[in-house]
Length: 146
Image 1 (cartoon, helix red, strand yellow):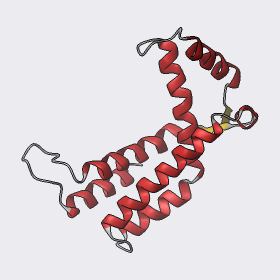
Image 2 (image 1 turned 90 degrees about the vertical axis):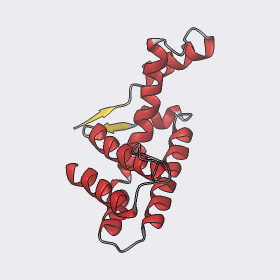
Image 3 (image 1 turned 180 degrees about the vertical axis):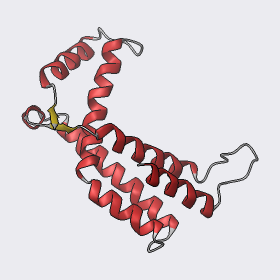
Image 4 (image 1 turned 45 degrees about the horizontal axis):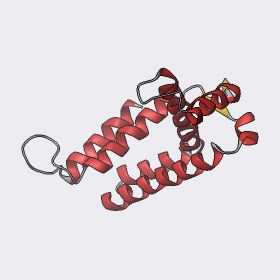
């Protein structure tokens, strides 16, 4: 079952934002961010098969780790750009639906995205970078838990 995007509430929140009646810590500001995130998450969800295909190729060692990270982050970037366009199109938002299991899929993408960004950083307190095998195992574990 899918749920429809609440366009009227989204418009209210946008008006509050434009009027300056919200702040960084305001409940309405957080709610507005949540609406925007839901659209971005649904755009990614609509390409779920592409994400799974890419992850499967990486885990099957068909593509190299650096290629996986690059393509994965580019897909997320494309989805974000698409979401920005849709958020300005009230006609599209009026018929926009959100999947019931959107949050679970979004969590998976978020975990893998964090791993991709964190790959080049010191991540475990030992002042050494994550190895390719550690990255592989972490991606695999995220995917298996989904």
